[in-house]
Amino acid sequence: MAKQYSRQKDQRWSLDVAPSQQRTYKTGQGSHVSVQKNRQAKDSRKIFWGAKLMPKNEDSLCDSREWWPTIKEIANDFEKQLISIGEENSIFIQLDMSRLNSALDMYEQSWRRLKIHTYGKEAIKEHIDRHKVIALYILSFLAKEPFSLRVNPKKQEVDRRLETANELFSLEIMQELISGWENAQKPLKLSKNEKTWLVILFNNLKLKLAESKPAVINDKPDRLADFLSLAQIVYYIEKSCV
Figure 1: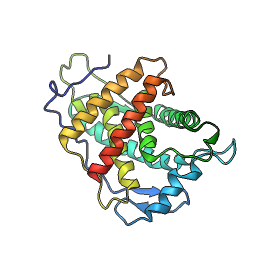
Figure 2: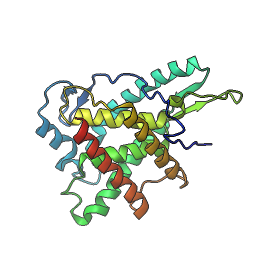
Figure 3: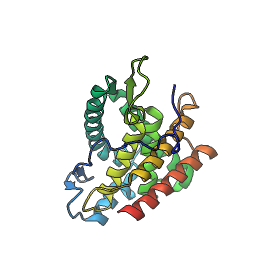
């Protein structure tokens, strides 16, 4: 059964799974750029999230798929770190690639739905800003939960990093995409307190998404409010930390 966490109850969390690594991101033109190198920021942004985002025709795929190999690389690295933590605690944790792919599909479907909801007939000409794109990724991973763990019923204590693996993975994705987007000279850094509150927020969003069967991100008022609020939080994190 999913647990709900609070700051008061879990003050001693150690939320660091592993230091952020320098990563290379693929642009829409097929070139590779490093997070820690000077990018042609404006051009890259237009390639990723600008006018090219909407399909040129009905058969075209969302250009955000250019990020997917990197997201899968992050997920695989994240799993290795979690496995090492699990082995110390005799707990089995695993990345389910089918769930990860399902989350990416959910992202794309939700992206299209929200584009139409927001812009109507003008959807092809307009684009959703990067903060909303990142928020959609976070909600999709929380809904599909690509990481799962198996715990010995006799074990009373479980490392919080394992119990909140999907929340921490969503946090990692947020940090990586903001860093990759913003021409950052170093990875985005959040304090332990900031991470704790974000994990608690993600945990509650995950529980709320789990209430619908299956969990769906849509343009209903309550879900739209969650999405827009999360996007605004991502915006303020970017402004304050990058």
